[in-house]
Amino acid sequence: MGFVTVNSHMATEEKSISEDRTLVFVPPHPLIKHWISVLRNEQTPCSIFRNAMAELGRLLMYEASRDWLPTVTGEIQSPMAIASVEFIDPREPVAIVPILRAGLALAEHASSILPATKTYHLGVSRDEETLLPTVYLNKLPDKFPEGSRVFVVDPMLATGGTIVAALDLLKERGIDNKQIKVISALAAPPALQKLSERFPGLHVYTGIIDPTVNEKGFIIPGLGDAGDRSYGT
Image 1 (cartoon, rainbow, N blue to C red):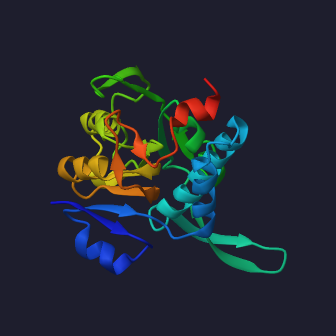
Image 2: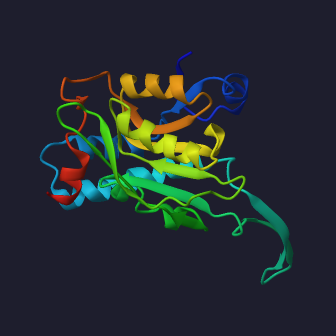
């Protein structure tokens, strides 16, 4: 079992393979490529880097929410006539789980895209020697409402340790793989392979897939440390 890369939103293909395969969507939008390029540039200053991360997150969440959000229909009075309308159902807010620190920047525009959200912060650090994750902040609820939809926002899917730790916490709280969509700026094969083995049917939306990870767990060519570059510390 492995992951399948999808370069655009193809519903027919998705239905035929999504039951037991991890799908990795890389939307072919020129703005996504632009913001990835800004993030990669080592000369990009902190404030512009953080803004680029936020804009990339906006685009990826827009793509990921397609055909996924609950809606309600009805009629309203326009200035001219009665119109049939469709709204996002505000009774079912999407849960946003940014993995600190850099996840905050990538998730910054979630509330401007999605009409109803709840944000649950999750802090996970990675040991620089062992590359193993440690959860230092957990604001997840003990149990999510039935049928919840969850965006897990982690800018860098490198070795996969951090995202796996986050998804395990969601599973413990009753969330199924198909209720989750992962949003990342960059991804690498080690993390994607680990996700495909542990969470079949999961959907990942990323700006680009880079070829490898170095011995220190950084994506190559990557963009460096997303947290440090977002906040200058």
